[in-house]
Image (tube, rainbow, N blue to C red; front, side):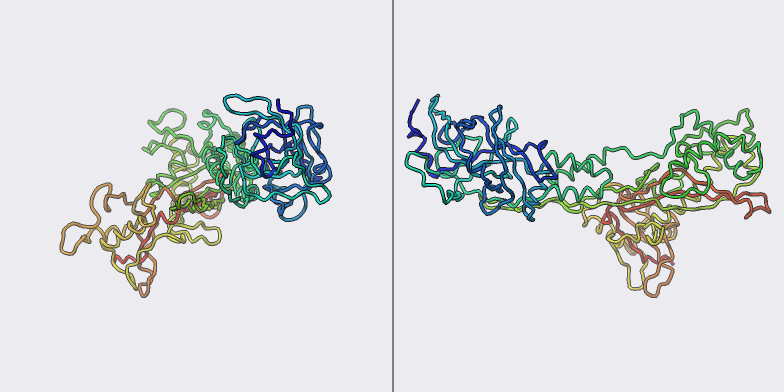
Length: 628
């Protein structure tokens, strides 16, 4: 072994006297109240430098702890102008790891770094030190190993970019051109027997003994604060944010994880846990009959099971006060197997379409068949994430870094809005007890609700408690016929498709939607004047090869210029981006007086629902089509 303070082979490389090593914050040793943290800043892990392998002898006899112990500064990235705290104390454990207790300041910069440390964003700790003595302990395959037996740490830094995080140890990227801090004024200049100062950062790669390029330090983003802000608007976002912060994710990584978690998370349910047998036993007619005849003991007793289920369903409705009885959501999605009349009172034979209330509602709505997404059984407000902007690609010069860009997100919010409808049911119908009558009642209720839900999905105003429909959604494409409207022609149809395609939204369940009046007009309008090929053709895809829905819920009473109340609408778009949500069960109230003279009972049905357009660019509309 060499007996000189620093072997000549090593001294040739130590031209600036300063070296740096990095470990990680011990997060379990953070005291938020005292604003202190325990930082492990040195160990005896071998580290390969460009001049050989370095082993720091981490003992109290080999370390000069005077500077650190007397209140050295806590820095950021070894920048002497970026002070964020102070070293309170230092100790060397039996595990041969040196640790410092540091206290963070209260300046704006210190607060930012302190928050990042608490949230697990800044984890890497680096120490700046000078080597005073070292011993050559081994030479193998031309690589020398030195044990540093006398060294002096003089500052601790939080570093943002580690180069090696193996075995729980982070190492700072090499920065060879940084100006080292000067010695304390009271200390003598190092003698020739002491180490000349150097600046060498730790690296996990063997680096040739040439000048390293200067590293430009990028300003540290406070990812924890940004993640917390984004998470505030996401259901269950607090838990997701904590996991991402602890994992050291960027904001972009958190957004990706949040969307993945929300897309995989099952929707909340408004079911009360009824078995298949119980849903088959439940009779909507018995429930309605007991409501229509509250003084009839036999009617109440017969509907005892249904009343109990309705009360349990009412407990699931937490967003508003329940005024009537609530049909459990389990019942709204059950199947009704209507067939040949059998014993048990099924005396009114009729051919009916089997299906649950929800399915009947879908079949009454043209929008469902065109791809509209329907979410039923919701509980509480929901927010659907939406990508509003993507990352940007750049052409860069050699060795230049691209401009930082990222995706941006917002949310489409949906909340329960109460839809009320009324339907009369005769007393004789209520006295029936067959599955056929169950289907009749459900069919009637589904019809009155579907008509209004379809109307607002297409042309809802968005004011008051009414959801906003496609035609009143800001940002959809627009095709104008004329100052005072115009009869639709082939050019208008093409322009509707073009408006969606130009917005890069021509994908998914693309279709046309219009009224019967417009269909009639297009059936007799040729594509080209004098040609016998008409715009609306026969078959399942009558407009330009796309499906076309027809419903009088599309308005024919719009106004354009002097054409007052006679303009119609034509819509083209991806109807999968129209979403309808339904909350809880169907609430029923009875009115025995309005139609009392003819023996009918009027039932008022209340259903909480909402509609939303996920991407306005997915739709384009012509609102001034003239059909007369």
